Image: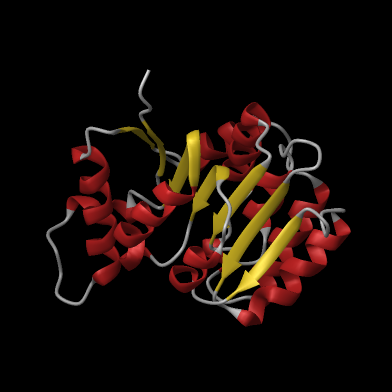
Length: 213
């Protein structure tokens, strides 16, 4: 998709909230790898899905500077909550500052550490899960997310097109691409899963596990 068409899409969705514009700017100025930021169009998609589902409990795996968590929090039902996990302490201050400014300091809880170790210790389940963490471990996250997802809940997994590398032959040592390709294959081959990859930015897969009638 060329830049002109991308700008058209961004210009014909809900405007980016001013607080998120400032977070985008600060991330680009201060934080390494700002391309990891969710951004306007994808953020509005996350907010739209959350607003559609009105979840009581949301789990995010991979916080970065908090942009996606703020978008997901927009749709949470009254009295609901969001837990977000990240392994990078250097971005915690930025995320927490914007959570407070948005008025979500009592809604969003940020857990610091390795999500693969933290997830088994969380004794609750969720209506909506957003996965945007270490790509080499996506296959492991799939089973963990299934355990943490309520019946009829939705899992959204980011970066499942991985810059088009899913179409390329494997390269020795490229564990991230291998993880994404294995994850995509596991999702496709599991008869208990309904899934759809949306070609939004780097690919977002919507996943739900079928429930017995």
